[in-house]
Each structure stands twice: as C-alpha cells, then as structure tokens.
Image (tube, rainbow, N blue to C red; front, side, top):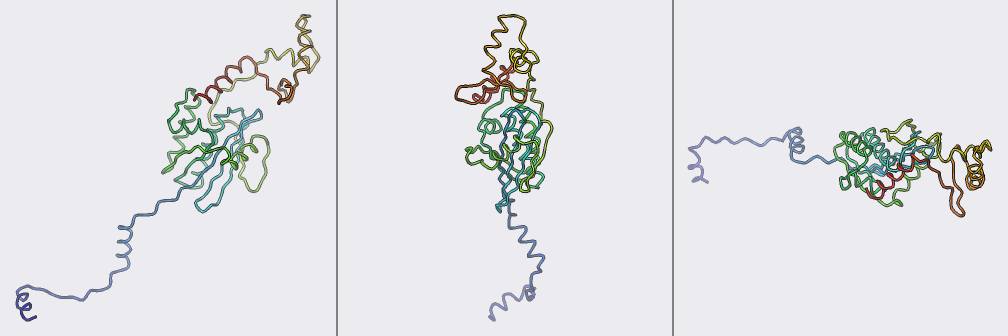
Length: 266
C-alpha cells in the first residue's frame, strides 16, 4: 500500500463518493436502449355480395384482444361480384382507419381479387384498375397492411353480413354498425336493360295479353309464354328441376361474358 501511495502520489487524484442516479436519467437510458413495442396487428375479414336488388358488404374487425367490430354496408346500385369484393376491401380499410388502427391484415375469400391486389394477376378491365388505385390511396394512411385469401368457410361472419346487407333495404340490429351507400365507389358502367329486346313481346303478352300483329310471331309468343314468368319486372325462364333463369337482353350478354372471363381467367 505504501508503494502504491508513492507511485500515485505524483498524480492529482481526487476521490468522491458515488451518488444515486437520477430517475429521469435512468428513464432516458431505458427509452434509448430498449426498442419500442410495435402496435399489434388487427385482423379484418371482408366479403361482398351482389344481386339484382343491390350490393352488400360485410366487414368484421378483430382486435388483438379478441374484441370484434361488425359492419354491414348496403349499396343501392347494381355492382358486379368482383366489384362487390373490392367494395368490401375498401370498406375494411376505411373502417380500420376510422378505428385508428395502423397495422392490419385483410382476409378475403376471393382468390382473384386477392391476387390482383398482390400483383400476381393484372386486371384487364379498367374498372378493376380504378379499384386498385382507390385501395392504394386509402391504404396510404396505414403503417403496414397486407391481404390474404382464405377459404369461404373461414369467412362466415363477413359473408353473413354481406348477404344480410344485400337482401334487406332496412337493416336494424344492435350488434352491427349499418350504413347505406347510394352509389358504388366507382362507376362500373353496368349496362341498362334494353327497352326493346327479344323479351319485349313476351313481357307485353304476360302483362297485357298483347300479341304482335304478325300471325306467325303471335303464335310463337303464345307457345313460348308458359315457359317464362315475370317477377319484380324481371323476366325469368322456368327450368324443369332447377331455379328460375334470369333472362338477358342482347347488350347484357357481352357484359356477362366479360365478367365470367375476368373471374375465371383473371
């Protein structure tokens, strides 16, 4: 000890007792060294349903804690099946933003729409490209989001809400937030029913028992009429053992074929 005292004596060393670290300094150290926890991901299940009376959208938001927010949205306009699925995704993103969520995973049972959003399939129709643009813009406020395709049986709640919204003009329930949207997010240019088509003589005969002046045409209409039925101003053909078949005007046939091709072939 004497030797070390001599050796260190030439240095001006001052010893002080160590005091307690201030609480704020410790807090600052913890904030600086420990990474912040990321916000947990919310799950959003969506589905769309389209029929002659309109379009229905179902959205189920599930918090990390398991709590659910259910949304049913009705669009009082004709929307295609693919359009209804896009409307559902747009509604899901909007609902997430309204709740204040920044990280979500969208679950849809539409493989075509999910792959189009992921970029695996490129839509050929302009309206689908418009929908993709709207989805990109609406998702811009989120920190992170993705979409996954799931089997239909795993999307039962959203599917039920969508069908409920599409089939009823007035929805009243305490468990579901219900809204009505008069027009779809984009103009899908769904063709209107032709005023004069091959169905016109049949409808005239069924409603007013009016026949064409041409005798051969009149006999043809009387022979065909029992095979058809008019419900809510829409003409259907009776089938032997199956459901009623919706009749299409000439200008609607090309549109339906495009929708089938878009749905099957992407």
